Length: 88
Image 1: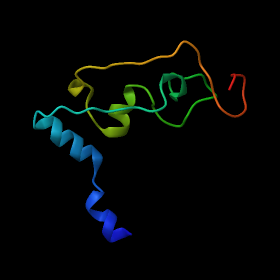
Image 2: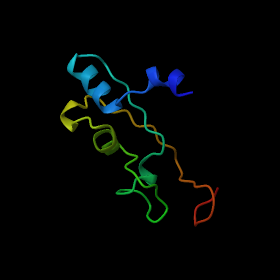
Image 3: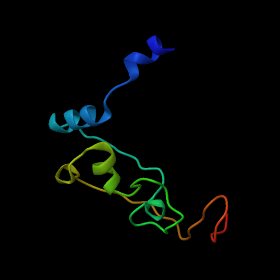
Image 4: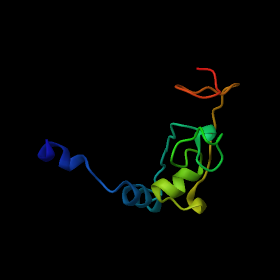
């Protein structure tokens, strides 16, 4: 499958920063949210990365000075799957 997939593989940090430099609008979505963020989450029930807005800089390489607008969606309660003190 490598020949089929090769055209679709890019360095995403370079691609996104190039688009920003060209004045294009870029939409970035996070999946896990703040409560799972390694720095701001409910330790020890966190993931191994920055899942909040900081992940745009640490994970994708976009400077914080280039982040224009942030829209947050929240729910009224926190849940987890698997073991731990949170209801599933």
